[in-house]
Amino acid sequence: MVNSEELKEQIEKEIPKSNAKVEDTKNDGMHFKAVVKSSAFKNKPLVEQHRMVYRALGNKFEEGLHSMSVETKEE
Amino acid sequence: MDKNLKKRIEELIKSSKVFLFMKGTPENPMCGFSMRVSEILENLNVKFKSFDVLSDNSIREGIKEYSVWPTIPQLYINRKFIGGADIVASMVEKGELQKILK
Picture (spheres, rainbow over the protein chains, first blue to last red):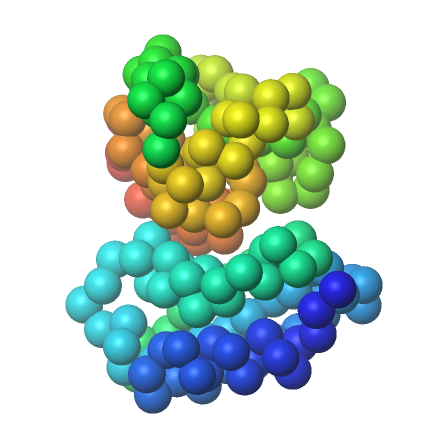
């Protein structure tokens, strides 16, 4: 199980100048939704923006994270 | 990545213009996100093939590495990785997926 706070911290640490809102959508420590704003997304295709968020999460998928719905915003 | 595994994945991807790696089958999806993408394709009347990753753990893990994408479902069109459920849904909303599929 993971929690939204640690996911938020990890995303913000790994993606430069980012701001993340993470929500545990089913309150089960497995299904999350993240809205991430960062200037680092600029001029990158959507797939790559989402990959950046997934990459930032590192091994969380092995630690019990099941799904992470992602919304990215350039700013 | 193992060569034979990579070859199996590539053969799947090129077996259909639209190919979906999912949990379960379109008739019996085993996860809400997989269901969402397969329903989107069905609603667009798109012919597609799918592979149930729950039936084969090497493909399940291999496709994550191959696509550099940690979750299932994964959609390929014309052998190109399109994305997972969020991206597919947002592309449909903007009419972009329909354009690629024309």
